Length: 288
Image 1 (cartoon, rainbow, N blue to C red):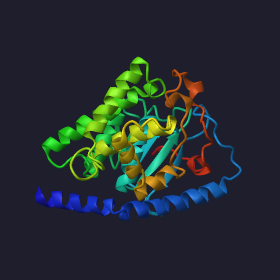
Image 2: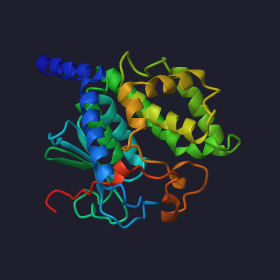
Image 3: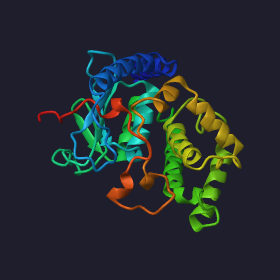
């Protein structure tokens, strides 16, 4: 209805100017600082295989438990896009990081992560989670045509990520396919947005893929000036800039950078130390 649309737009505009994101980030920073100070002597987990309980970082105003909880491994992987959506739009949430204990298996709908709790709703599958959050934050496209285009670019971002090994070997089959897809993205990049005149899921998903390429292979976006400028502008948004330098941002592992074949659990050793705020506060599933 018209009233619902107006309310949704108003909430979204507040988030876009950073009010909700700033409040949530302030609360999260305070909680992380307290946790890090109280657990300063705790050894940092060196890999995903660490046998330790899940940890949590709250991205919400102090003393105000959020409705939304995102659970994923202490990796970027399939959890990073939902985190970016939540951070950008300022939706308060608890970010839960799982290690090698498998405590999520009894309650996760498909026995796997990521899992999203939104009030009574419990869902899994990263694409379903991303689309749900996009609808919740009104960044899924304005009309039916825009929603279809947002989905199209969302799928392109997934295709780019699937060929990430090609960023290190342009002459390989994956490298050639990746170059063709990057050229397509470059041709469709409107500057700040891929669909319409405001941020959508398409932008967040493509930023996630392209920023990762730029991180693991510096200079790889030089042949694509519009994509390079898009990534720089997106990363400069206050909510995103704060997140990228926060304890909520986990380091990459060898299995995630595309430089070598997937090597199973040993490949999930962190390339940089986890920040204390990431692992300092233990978390237990509801009802545990």
